[in-house]
Image 1 (tube, rainbow, N blue to C red):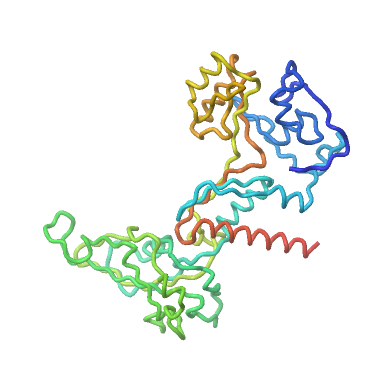
Image 2: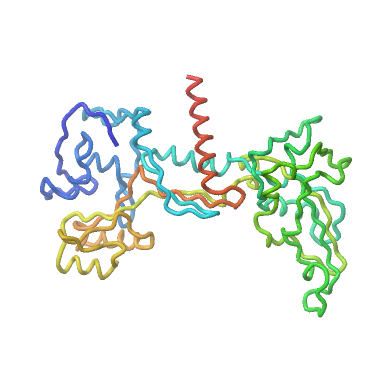
Length: 388
């Protein structure tokens, strides 16, 4: 990352956060941190967290433009600096999960993105349930709550928000209608017959989309002027539960549930059922640093202990992997505290390099969630600029 500097680089070998007082000028530490106008130990504090056996040091993020003014170095960033420094690299991607590197941003940016993913990206979820019959042992309120938490596969961009004010139109543009009718005519579990609904298990697969709208409009107040399946997007990708095996209720012989459920657009800030992610989280990218060149017995011992996923032998001796496996981190942290290794090995984490994970509920693909969250964050920033 390019940062402006008004002074020449100052050399420092003082014992600060990983710097060794007896280390020569061209140590591994100096090669790592001689990238700005700051002394090595300050550059180390600015860009790395040092992971000790019992606690981390240098965990503070220095985001102020004047943090290093006494050293004649500006810590400020222009928009061009941010644009050139930020990058996203996808590590893993499937229908429900995305893992990517988010590089060159502050913790506040990463956390804002995480919070937007959880609470501000809209989805469609069941909000109103109208019961026509429920002879099960489960109260209507409990069934309605369970239905609300079932992820519904429907593109939220095709629908508008629906208000609850009197006279607010409830139509095909802001409402999705699902119906469920399930009954048990067989015996209880253990009986010989298996008629009806699989010994009374009511699952999410029983929810059926009604593109023509409510079948009881006088009761629900929802009136469609046209069928939703006339829309090409919905016709090719009908509304349905994301998972068809979610258990809603169990019925005994002779019991029945019949209802109509209405989905509306909302965000996780209003209720968790509208949150499009099961979880969204990040961690700092770790790195293992060899503080001195190693070969011979010490190198062989590390190779034998951790294997080729963490260390490898190169032309100049032992080399550490760019990123060690997650399961090895605590072992490396503990080893670096031992007297034999504390001057040879160190576990660090990069302050502006996040490994971000998005686990979608399946309603919206994770890459679309990221794109939408970044758009929302951009609009928020633009709104602040307009008010300045």
